[in-house]
Image (cartoon, rainbow, N blue to C red; front, top):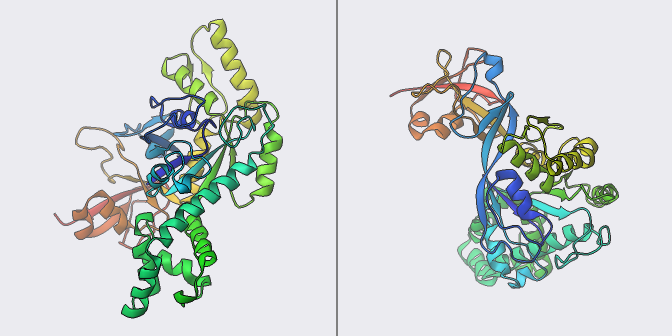
Amino acid sequence: MLIGIVGKPSVGKSSFFKACTLAEVDIANYPFTTIKPNRAVGYVKIDCIDKELGKQCNPRSGFCINGKRFVPVELLDVAGIIEGAHEDKGLGFKFLNDLSQADILIHVVDASGSTNEKGDEVIALSHDPCKDIKFLERELDLWLLGIIKKGWDKFVRQHVTASIPVQRAIAEQLSGLKVTEDIAEELLKNFNPDLKTWDENTLLQLAVEVRKKTKPMIIAANKVDVPGTEKNIERLREQFPDYLIVPCSAASEIALREASKTGVINYVPGESNFEIKTELNEKQKKGLEFVKNNVLDRFKSTGVQNVLDEAVFNLLNYIAIYPGGVNKLTDSQGRTLPDCFLLKKGSTALDFAYKLHTDFGKNFIRAINVKTRLTVGKDYLLNHRDVIEIVANR
């Protein structure tokens, strides 16, 4: 799974990326601060299963704080996309192509309206953030249209003369965007099957459907620490009811995570409060008071963790599954419940066996639900936070 972080320049995109990962990235208010795409690991949060099992977990990857398990996901931060990116303006092709393998996009929008179309700073609330969503949709649609049109005539001739099924031909044409034959078949339900009748407008409609299907998007309405952003968020929700709009403050999340990292506070990402551990200097005191009064008290969290969790568990429909044994929850190094994997909702016990190791899948005998201690078969549908033991021939 790859989560792409997109948006125009200077909306706080790299700050959002750093808030998710604490990765060292360049953060500045000018276009193309991020010339090369940044990749790093972020974490989605679930209620850990360890308390239910009466054990303290020791994650191999990720971490656990106060019963909250943080499971790693890969994030990709691409440089700010400007108008005309689909025509390769501002290195547009490179930036857009970097997103081709993303499974979902987090569109970071400046909800305070303090950056214009070009990413230049303007007076707060003077720019309409709704325009930014429309702009990005259009750039993505026109980029996808360019991919579809490339060699389209040759593609149609091959389909007609060689009698290749439409869905297979389109899947081959768009394989770089993770379009499978099943996805192509679903996309084509509302289109005329006679490709010779298709004009550019039809291809644009197809591009729009490809974007919606292969690049679902969640809106991170950033900079909510700026007074007056609530009205803009209401307008975003009114104009884009199909999108999940999550208010957030990446700068506040960075401040809290950095303070927690240095031992100044206890803070669990995504929570509505923090605990002060040391005596604060005046600067620290003012900074933390600002975050609490202007973000946590108003929005119940900084929103950054919420965006990741909603993207993975709500929009992509993933579930978290632990491997474990009925009589042994530790690995060879004594770590309890060391692993937690993310799988698509609808995955089976056999899918999980293959996820753990190909040999487990090939030699699958049965699985055991550790929480219920019941034996289940290969077709058992996994539930979020299941602990599963796989029994296979060696």
